Length: 435
Image 1 (cartoon, helix red, strand yellow):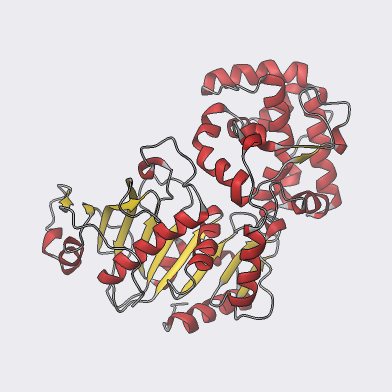
Image 2: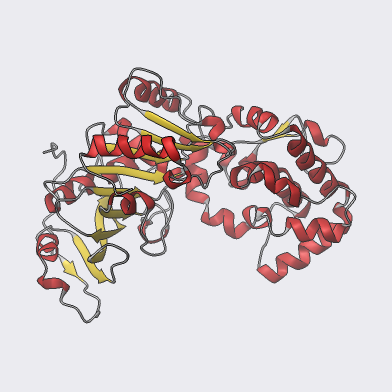
């Protein structure tokens, strides 16, 4: 058993059981859960291969260094199948709206914990103080959850997994609590070394084919050249969608256009270049394509307000990216210089101090002690520019899907590559995966 460095307060347990028409409180799982202090439990309908499911609010210290101080409740969904099976912890990294089955739990037919990140949605502390939105505090949240659920599943192996920022959360969890679980499976998780990592720029200059990269830049230039005709369309569309832009229309428009190249390679493939309008397209044709890409939403006040906890982390610990302007000289009004920082997307970002020592430390740790890591990446994904380099001192396995995007998952692989992934999981988890 892991050493407990905190004590769970002996609070009155509140059980909120949904009126679902089935006697969840008579199951062995429910009996185990109700004996753990400090949980709010609500039965929900199980999905897929699961037989029981619960929404659970776990009481957490805002500051784990002060466990008797301010508390908040963190949302966790538990989906159960068998006490003898592993438990896959899916660390979302953001907010979660409802329960769902993640790929890894489905592949190994395990139990699943689906965990919301602190400062998002239902797991937001009642405070305006952002200083506890750190990788360490989030890792301590996960560690406390592991200790709680090891009481429920004492004989199970535990897996920490997550996608993108959730994958980063798993990496950081390993760094702060290296023995907390048995296996770590981060998907498409970047490891940025600086506030705005320049490896992103190099990736965008070399990813895919030159023909596709040139077509993307030509489209961006056409958007900027035709700005006077397109911005009124953008305003009309924004009013329809409820988008507002405190940064002003010129800056919002330019940031949306600059974001396009990052977004394209994050989510698309070379073949999608065929759909990009030619630079001599009409403004209407350019905008009809552009408004479907999502960048206008991304730079809107509403999206940036929802992303604020992430952006705070990005500009204090996680790192992010800016935009190189060399290809767009003379076409910009609101953005100037060789590189424009994306810190305009988070109010007060210019006043935040970035920890330049943390990520290199984590990188050294996982290269030297990062055992039982299975990393999943897509080759073309812009975030793969800052992918983990596991080194040769551990048993870590890194799989990169050729032509893959940020949507790359285990089942994106085929043949020998997929077999290698399955064999790795079977070895580390001592189980058999159905082919």
